[in-house]
Length: 385
Image (cartoon, rainbow, N blue to C red; front, side, top):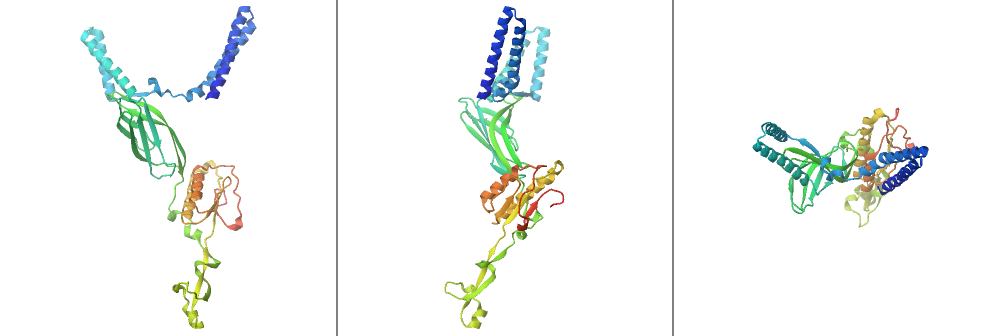
């Protein structure tokens, strides 16, 4: 803002210099110089008005001015204004002093309504509290916190538009804070940012519905919808699978039979081998080794593939979510991002954040991976699946 302000002042200073020079040139009879400098001054002033003034005005809080609030006449307000019109017509045509007194009282009531309504919206601060992350089509809590910084007068009858249902605040005491809780859900993934909250009120007499926007700063990352395991086309247990490593462990396949030692569990004693050798023998089992899953995500897609792309994103998020929650390391690979092959919550958070904001592209290259390793490929390229 300061940079824009200083640039605009510099251009206006140059425009002022040209304007002063044009005046001097006019007195000296230099018509060509007068015309050139005057036109240049006007062009610079117009340039500042078009280029810089909108930028400066955008960062100004105009809501303190009553004229920038939005008004809507209610049914009661329409009846009241109709009555004012009838009394005005009768007073003008009859010149009756009593009707003029009634008309003055009605107009005073209108002015009082506007004044109290204006005061009711002043010195309020609002805060929108959203979770940092949620999932599409999942209900989450929304909280609105309103602070009244006035020292004497309460705030009455405020209806605030929230991402969920509207919240009503009947009264907020001076120097007080009131918080209300609601619920909301977002239908699509992405980044949702809120910089203003619209607040409405019929206070004090209900003649007008006044609206005003309050600045807030809230953001929520909406991750793709997580589908249940049974709705996925690929079975999670089949993906995970297992195979035995040729070393000792806690698997189910037999690794070797050896002599029994006191530290071994009696449940692992092999009685057939014991009977043949006349010495206690125990079984050792091979260790299981879950396979690391390579999940390859292709961002390629055309404008007609938008719905299919969203389904694919949801599938990728669901597979990653269920695999990592089952303790399975997932290595996620795309053309512009790659996750570590871990089964940690940090990896899952990073993966979900990426899928929440990933964008389809017609020029996206194919992700690079080793086909011999085996991978689960999610792609919309024709001829691949």
